[in-house]
Length: 207
Image 1 (cartoon, rainbow, N blue to C red):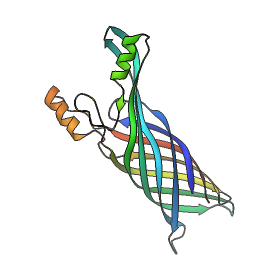
Image 2 (image 1 turned 180 degrees about the vertical axis):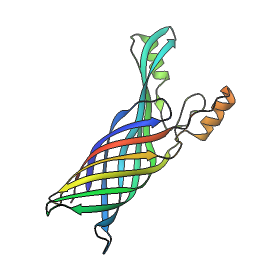
Image 3 (image 1 turned 120 degrees about the vertical axis):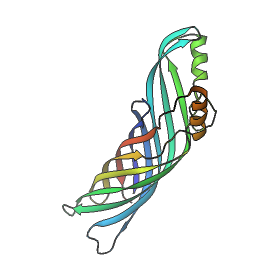
Image 4 (image 1 turned 60 degrees about the vertical axis):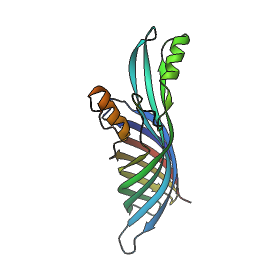
């Protein structure tokens, strides 16, 4: 089955709000024999996650509002156990639950400032960087590996067309350990442990 959909994502425990992204992927199902509608499904996805927050800048002769956005691009492998119930020959409903494993393949931390002039553009450039690269203190950077658990509920029409709604809770601390240690050595403050959260709406077509 091919999938395409929309993510509403958030970096938990770090004061960030939700951000909209996209996802696409493929799935393969294996129906367990004599298991009354139970099956195992696995696949591979490209998924955009991240978050955003508002900030107030007061440096470089700038006093202006701005925003920070993280766009984190992952390749994910979900593995789930599902159960399907056919209401009729053309309409079926199903639910799935299980873990996912992912690796970050790209992404950016982007700064946008509500001000004009060279100073504002220079500050935007200073605060924009690759999200998974290890720059060191004080720039926050993310580790590439993530894992968590998620669920999906869906409906299938005519054994082809699918509509799915689901959520994933990341269980891994996505900050780099080196950043956390260096930040503590410099400031005496322990950074929070941010985790990914994702809510998704997906359309699927079964080949």
